[in-house]
Image (cartoon, rainbow, N blue to C red; front, side, top):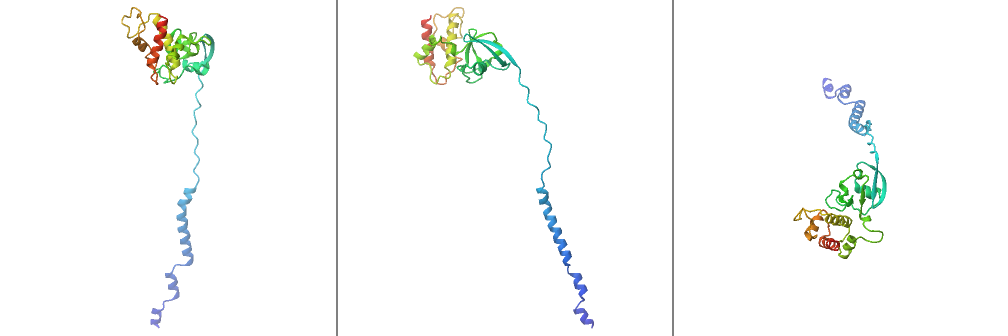
Length: 232
């Protein structure tokens, strides 16, 4: 009888060694819950953060009245103090003949004549010229009659693309007036006396502030020389 008990243990001991069905289900459920926890956290919507306050845009600069006489016509403009003369001519006066080239005062495409002196209109503010008389390329001709400089540029083919031509024309016009007034240049031999003639070297030096990307310099010099010879 003792041998029978040794070979066949009681059923209670067998159940104690095997996991119960309830414990197995509890363990499986716990494992699934632990595995799903990171995914659940990843799928949670992000917590809305408060939007930082945006600074209001700066107030517009106040406008100033600027009175100019452009090509013999009075203009009353309302401009910001930082508006260049070039932008005032193009954007406010509607005179787009003056070109914006480099906008750095290096190419001369924006040259105009202010109170008889040629200037780069991109380098000066419009408010600095209030009350002055400004001549642009639109004011060189008298109605339908071209000026002598304009005719000479056409006759000597002194332009190609034409972008620099308005500045070249204004510069050449002022150059001739400066020469007749006796103004010297860097190549003038005797600065106390006007040169007897406007030589090619004089013209090149006096026109050196106006660049031509097409390279029409030889014809420009010929055109200015022709006008200077006729008006000497």
